[in-house]
Amino acid sequence: MMLDVQGLRAGYGRIPILNGAEFGVRAGEVVGILGHNGMGKTTLLKALMGFLPAT
Image (cartoon, rainbow, N blue to C red; front, side, top):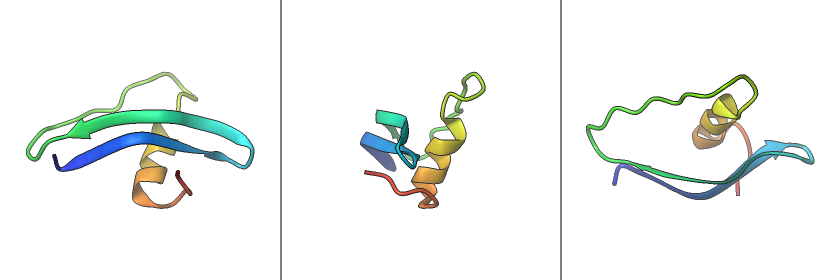
């Protein structure tokens, strides 16, 4: 597994945005992130890149 995310939690201050995100990406796999406005797509990417504290 190239990327394995288990129980990712992230948010802004006391406002939780991601609560237990789980997914995996294999080497060579192409993945897209889809969702409505305000569903946490940017928050997910910021947490994965280390721009937001995640637990």
